[in-house]
Length: 203
Image (cartoon, rainbow, N blue to C red; front, side, top):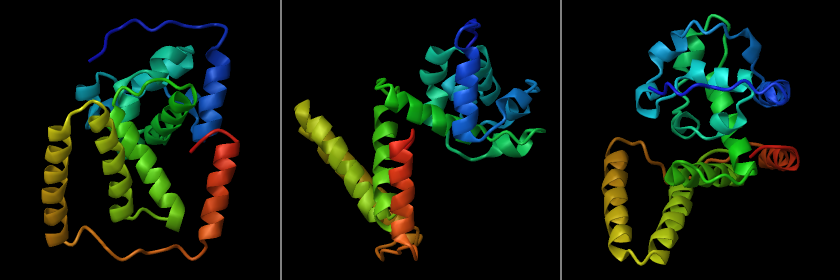
């Protein structure tokens, strides 16, 4: 667990809090650090940052720490934190916001493969309005393979393909992988939301 001392930035605290609160639609000021979220976070031990601490970073205006921590990239959006929070603060929405802010700031992701999966998911979901496993994983694996090939590591590409093929077979056996492309009724509306997000700050 991270014990690094957080710094209060008197100049930027208010603007960072306002930006994250508006973009995530979460009232971070309502957090009184009861840590019920921390007790239920399944990745807190691994990331060294729990939801309460992440919120504290934003409240103190510590932009650098808020945008550069593993919880932003490894949050699994299980919403356990939100169900435990007495003030209904959904930290998963905050981590998603900080992830987008990190990308906009062109910071190197602490987990590049998570960043690749995130962008692949968003791209695949934009096409038909919902995530299609075949398209999403195709985009993701292509990105991964190109990066490995640039490093000259053909074996890593082969290992990745073999591993994903085994996973795919397991998912098919459990009927968790679908080949049929299901579209939402109004794809144009979804695309308009994506355009709006890209024009503002998001996606």
